[in-house]
Length: 137
Image (cartoon, rainbow, N blue to C red; front, side):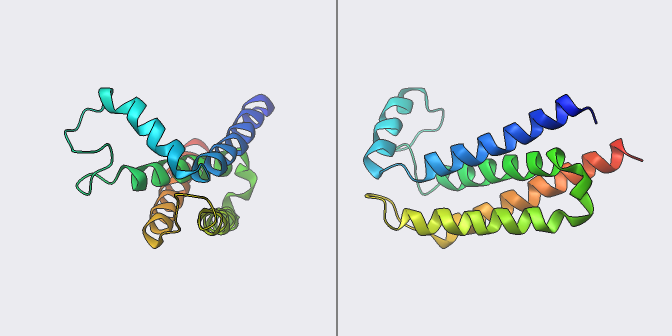
């Protein structure tokens, strides 16, 4: 893999970590403001932007951690034999964000969010490893 592409993956990985830390620690009132802004374009009917039928917050957790895991594995492809170190680091980061959310007004820590983080990490590592296997065979 070229050095330029490696740098791009690494910058993207740290960028996603920043987005995760920023978005998961926003106060609840900011989330509500964002929801009211997005609501007119929301494709699913519901009484509120986030309904019990469609857990958008879990999808956001899953997507962000999937993207972070895939970018970290791709950015440090020399560590692909030690992918579990990346997964463990992201799991600890997920625990940290849930702990921080306990102290943010209008937010709370949730085991469901942590499970969504774990699913995202697993899928991200898996997608990146499948890609690397095909690319380096």
